[in-house]
Image (cartoon, rainbow, N blue to C red):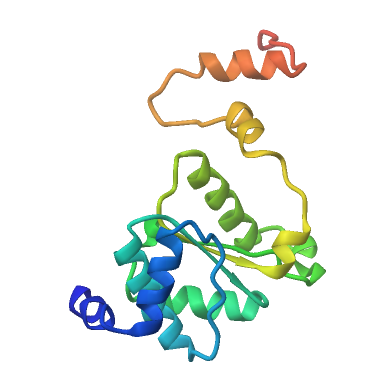
Length: 165
C-alpha cells in the first residue's frame, strides 16, 4: 500500500492539498472522486501529512461505505466512524452498534487518537459534552485493577456506599 501512496505523490492535486495544509489551511474540499479513489486519496494524504485527518461526508450511508473502503488501508485502531444516523430506529433497539461505535470514538479521542475520523454532516449539528469533561468523568474498568477510584467517582457524583444486607 505504501507503494501506491508513493505513486500518488506525483499527483498535482494531492501535492497542492499537502502544500496548503502545510501552510496552515485547515479545510480542504475535494470532490469528483469515486469511493475507492477517495479511500486511496485519504490514505495518501495521511501518509504524507503524518497527522490526524477529519473527513466530512454527506450522510451515514456514504460514511459507512467510505469507512469500509478505508479498512483496506488502515488498521481498525487508525480509523473511526462517528455518525449520527438521522433515523430514530436506534432508539427502539436494545443494542445499537452505532452507539457502541460513538463511545469508541469518544474514548479514542480522549486517549489522543492520531488516525482518520469520518464525520457526517448531521453529526456536526449536535452538541456534545466537551472532550475535557468527558475525559474527567469517564469510568474505565479494567480486569484485575482496583475499583477504589470508581467508588470515589461514584460517591463524588452523589452515590452512597452501603454494606450488603
